[in-house]
Length: 361
Image (cartoon, rainbow, N blue to C red):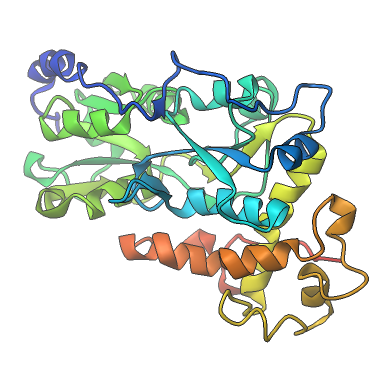
């Protein structure tokens, strides 16, 4: 069983690397502030509050290329960011009616419960404890993922390496995530010893990995692919393993519990994007294909039996989602395909994936 190198030296380097501060725009667990216009109290209806405010407060990542990050102009972009824009398009007819709050993994749940944000769309795993003890409700899974590990080929790791090969390693990951428990329980079950170091900012995790303060990095496989693909030449030596992830990570949007009207809007926004992909309806052809069949006509608000107004939305709510943001495939291809992330489990059920939207009727 191979021992990962430099574990003792790495521990000393971790202390030095901890000094890096996160960007000022990022909300950390110790710095939750109240939004200028807070979300609903327990007695208020969140959809009514958001509608009256005229803007959706949405919590996102700003350090994960492809899912949630800031581009060169400082604008938020990515797969998860697009869901915020889609929900805004459904409620207001304007995909830009969003205030984005950059959140660390450790701060994201307090941000929901404090009312700082209405919607959390930040590569968040749906788990039993979060669905109950933390007081969240979850929408449909938008990305099926699993936890993997990343190490350097120069240290003897390959894509065929196994978890047992990290015995003796310093392993780094995000604080406040399911990855901490997953890797700890996996190591215990295999009888191997690791030193786990956690940081709120994944940029700090990566800096420790680059400087060899960490031997191994672990998080969702998609996150590792994202960082490897955008690292440049240095990332060519980074290897991701094992082939079969060590956990299930169904990622999707979340909001405060017991706000079913708001939850219906988020849920059916996702389903509308999936149904549109099913039917070949895109942002470029939605105007000419709005009456492709009865289901599409209802969903896009073109018939009297549309259901959007019963949800408290404009009749053309989901037409605006597709027109302004696109269907699921368009969003995926815009942000994730360039990273080399194949659809796999995130394909429609008709293509062998797990995405199966219920009917709009």
